[in-house]
Length: 415
Ligand SMILES: Cc1cc2nc3c(=O)[nH]c(=O)nc-3n(C[C@H](O)[C@H](O)[C@H](O)COP(=O)(O)OP(=O)(O)OC[C@H]3O[C@@H](n4cnc5c(N)ncnc54)[C@H](O)[C@@H]3O)c2cc1C
Image (tube, rainbow, N blue to C red; front, side):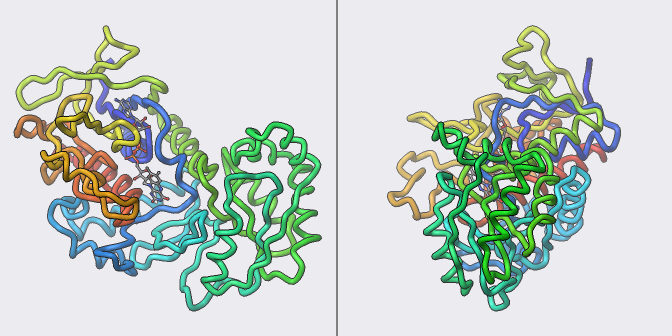
């Protein structure tokens, strides 16, 4: 069957675009190759957090100062505000409730206890609007005995440095202790599978209520709510004090929930999600892509009017490199990258790395280029795009959602 749009990549950008198109009645297939980087996401999204080493307070204002090759500049600063509201609404429609505003960054807390500017944060997570007015003075940091993926010492110190009075309290329950028989079970995902029954949640609440002392707020690692937020709401109700979750090291339950809920919403809207298949090439005629071949459907290329490349950056293999060059492996599209491989990386983990800005080249409508020519019906979205830097600029999830929605609009209005 010929589709209206085929999207390659089922992470945040691919799903956002797919949802926006399916909502408007398009027949959409997503070819979803594997895990997305949402599994690293502890529950916050960033629109624009940092420019030239300075924290950004108002992302919408700061976007107007970005260079012309940044994806936001291509969309146009005046359209970003509208699309940012649409993104927040889309997440809410999918069952992902986030707080935040594109005109005022708040602070999220990383698993290492560092405060970073954020656009949206899950409602149940610790969020600080103003570092001079903390949401609580005394906090009880509940540390699950035997759970490895939360560096409690660093988190507690980071919170203290921000001005919280922190009491780190180790606890367990009989159920959690039984998981410790196998050390590999003490991951956030295993705990989340376990903390689903009312009895298990009640036992955690009993521990929190008896140990939290005079704290104004209780903090718990984000180890519950893998498919929806019902267990979190239940636990918050069972606790005597306000309870907020804090991000853990990956695998991150919050990010997995976002992926699950977005995929579910896309399918509910009639979208077709091909799990575990990968785009491996396509046939072009002039300035058009005719079809896409996938690993599992090699004899049946997927035909569509429009195609969207959302295969991510190096970590998801949307981009690749060999000794000679950086390249895009599915269609060999034009890539913005230094030809001299000496320039790709700099020594030092904290140094800005040139490769993190590399990506496919596009025109202002985010249509891809191949051998210098625009492919009018092949768009690129998300972290495969060049000109942004999720690590240094804190613009990763914003670029993913906003370019996805901008391209959906371009497709719907035939641009
Ligand atoms: C380690 C890490 C931590 C991060 N932490 C944060 C954070 O805390 N906050 C924040 O705001 N942002 C964060 N980001 C950035 C953010 O996660 C990404 O910018 C955003 O989620 C990228 O979404 P995407 O859909 O563009 O790409 P991806 O999430 O990479 O998804 C691309 C998908 O395409 C699939 N794929 C690849 N090739 C093919 C193919 N040929 N055919 C079909 N499918 C294919 C991949 O398997 C993958 O599932 C982080 C990124 C990383 C790498």
